[in-house]
Length: 380
Ligand code: ATP
Ligand code: MG
Ligand code: MG
Image (cartoon, rainbow, N blue to C red):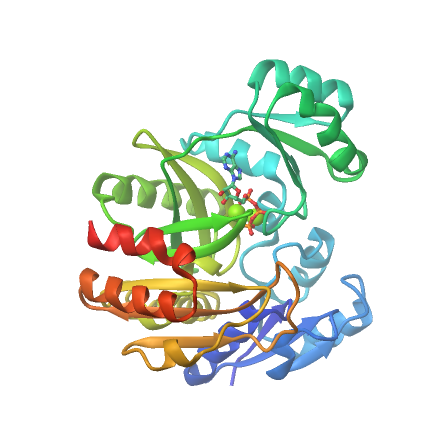
């Protein structure tokens, strides 16, 4: 039985392990957090990401290594790649870890991005603001997730406050200033590429964020015909350029019919959780297949899907569980403000049927605000 090693033990690792089991693939997860939720599956505890003694044992026990956590230090990923097959390649990981390298690559691949400038000093910030203007977003180049490590500059006089918030991180990690895009909507491309270069994408997903955290996803995204083809092309160019193997997500803004690249996630992605029940093969199954050199499963949908993210704490599962084609995912994590603790996916063959199911669940859970954009998109 092949063993898949997973760096990072969050919910993504757990869902990968659940998808691996029926393929006859065992998983071994390493993490430094004591409460890693995938620890329920198969734990190996690291002191930190440079705990090479434990990583040595890990490398000896697994056939292929992949990632749940995109911020595994590049040195650790390279060290492992000298001992065992690592997918995606640590070079792809390194690009995705750095917003500056990532956006530069997007442009080289023909994907436009919001205007951006690298920021290392307070003077750089003034210079960049003079070029980009306000509103803008100052972000750490590295280690940001769920909107953390970001400061929204509404007017030029916010520069001092932005520097007070993030300036201390400029020397260690670097910062980037981006133009704030008043986008019409946000989409993500979930794509998968095998070791032999077979490339597929799932239908585009539309996403809504609250305070920088994904709140709701709808798939397939409505009215995307031309964008679907363009997004698939861009994702393929990017994947080939990186020699990418496995699943990745490309987060996009749509503004006046144009696609702008926000970031890529070199792993399975929250906006693809709907594929577990809503697609023939899920992102988790196809990631496992791709990194182990197995043929890919079909990325077609089984209809329409809406995913609610549960942030902070879990609501009552009953309304979802008593809905036809409603599915509950409790990550088994402690409640904490801003933390992703679970999600629910609701599917239906017809858009209007799904809108009704989602509307009823939202009403029962008093989450109308969270659900309203999807209900609107499904009924218009
Ligand atoms: P993730 O959890 O997706 O990795 P992150 O911390 O890397 O999040 P981003 O994806 O950069 O953060 O930003 C989070 C959200 O904030 C975006 O999905 C978008 O809604 C908004 N946002 C980020 N950058 C911009 C921008 N330049 N213009 C407008 N909105 C933006
Ligand atoms: Mg990110
Ligand atoms: Mg993002």
